[in-house]
Image (tube, rainbow, N blue to C red):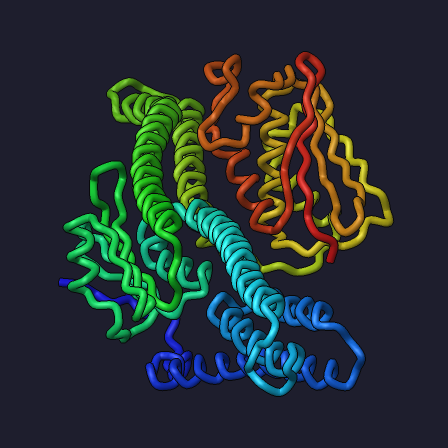
Length: 501
């Protein structure tokens, strides 16, 4: 069952132009105007030359110029009519005996016939040149229109969106009144207007099956098969202009290729998405399994010890309970990071932005990071004239917390960690510098990916690889950017930007 898609409805467009009587009247007026101009020019020259002392040669050449002009502008029919009328007036007014159609001298017969033949031959040559020029211009214009259409078709990769847009693209590119496309694979007809009886579903389906081009010059309708080689893809109907057969065939091939390309891109995208999903699933399982096993093992061992019959003193019991509490908090943190990452990816986190001083952000982050920073010297380089920034305080403090925790994990104990900030136009850049092992150029583009951890550190330092990914998502949600500069063996500087309030 076919379905009509209404893309651009304007029922008042070209109403009069679709009526045969209106078209005939408009053509008749244009033809009368052209005949009037041509014959009026001849009449003006007759009146002028009858009042001036001129010889017949001058008159004949002047008439010939008018005939050539008419032929070059309006075609052979009007030019020949003008030439015949000019010949008759030339005989009547300028060849003796004057004011009669009688020719007394044989030379005048030769001159009159020579003028008539010259006018007709010149008209034919001028008409041919005009027609070839028009054809060349029309083909050039059609090539430009095809190129413009190809740019639009190639920029759309979604199959459903492309199918709905093709009739509208074709109509606008070639100045048509209507375009409709039939695709047998989907058994649907796509229209630019809701109802347009000149193009029928049956005609579109018939051309799609037969694969033959149909052109109706009287109704200004063309129906073009869409083919990839010999394989039919569908058909497209055009109304309102007659294009050359070559252009129509090129149009059919272009649309067919675009549909096939969009389908291939969509299939490839689904395959790539499936592959990435499988890769992500494997990374999640690997990371979560590894990170969850350690705290679960500690909790299990502590609980088993507490439940055993062995005598445990109060200090030992408290130590085991502390281990259970610490590892439980760690598990809770891991689950929380995974849930937060999912929310950020789905853009389900609402930001509450307000102006805050940078120092307040830093202090909140230091409170959260106190436990991991205890063995490191902390240095703050915050200028007094820093402007306030418009951020969600808790979220941006969380970003800084992740950067501080990352610096503490990968830096030797006792080495300094520096927090600094500076203004750069309408943004403030906050950075965290450490004295860790550094990150090579290859890994610098990967550290902000979910679940990625350094090749040399992943088995020595605990972590899930979600901290920097969460920080990146939060910063980008604020309209900022996050990055790093690093040198192997000399440490790293992680930085992010936030907008000035």
